[in-house]
Length: 183
Image (cartoon, rainbow, N blue to C red; front, side):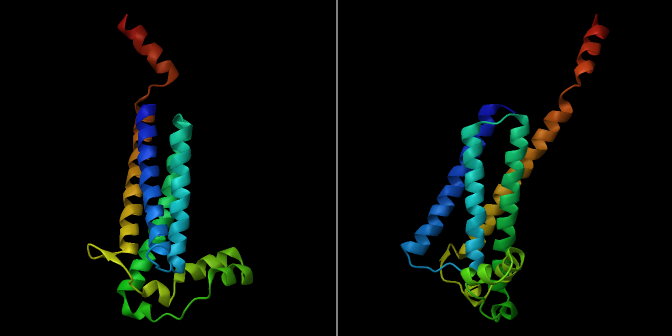
């Protein structure tokens, strides 16, 4: 895999995630939508993905760096996929929509440990069940889910390409033995 190809893919992923992050801030501050706890978790994973891809595009890593950057991009996109999927489930299931309101994120993190607070955030609340905006009949969490799944597929594909190229590369002694056999 060439360096230019990996840099351009990281730059495209960075641009897409920066655009999605900008759209989330636009919907919050210009349109006036208030993000719920699961929206904030998705925004956190989107920020991590944006930073990871931006650093990789600037850095231009070699083989080990590509592994690390694609694995971290995959981790961030899988975390965002989980949060978006949970919110889509809450919005589509009337039983889950009747969940009691969760306390604010500041109250959660000050009152309990980080693990317990994240578990409470992933459970969601009434504010996570309300559908306040759609585009082409898809809600914000559905768009977010599509984006995170697409980035996950890209990261898995690139990791598989790295594995394939590592398997195709001959061992150091093999190349010299092949040359000797041809003579």
